[in-house]
Image (cartoon, rainbow, N blue to C red; front, side, top):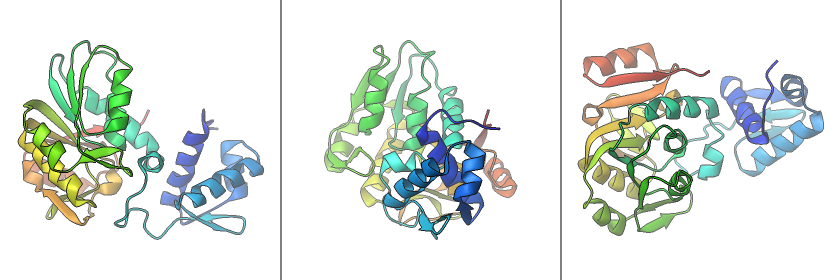
Length: 262
């Protein structure tokens, strides 16, 4: 029997359950998480309030498509594929070397990288994400550079010409790039034009680009093109990666790192 340490983890698992099944019931969830039906109803009502599921009598149904071109607040995005993002963050952090200058894109998976830097003593980290900069400040030993610019409230990130012009003065060893959609033929894409623009600038200022994203992003396309797949050096994802895509990436000389949930 699995037990969950926080309301956040339980709600993340509820959303994961709805990824695997179109509908769940209060009774099923109560038994699974070993909490009262009253608690489960509170969870479902809160997730409904955030437009993350549809409430039906006795339970809930998944939305037709939770990632269909509109911005979801980053606090809520963290609930989707919660364990996969944690595993990817842990693995991606092992690709960093001491004394490097790294660039962390905004996003829920890149935030997990920031949470896994305990073994490092000296890093310079450039980011356009306010929440990531706050997370990094807890280490009290890194040089953290937060880009200025126009604030996107949904992603807590800075974008626009000011952010891009500041970014152009930094040469970085590695970019960890968050991805909304990944398609072998159509490349990497995102819902927001300004995010795509700053992602392209980030790539131009980095020796190596490492794309970090969970396997739900494969075979999808968003509104705005970022880059073609052949411009990426490494993909860090989870075990849900389709086998044919894994083979295609390796044939394209793109390194593939698979994070396993523990």
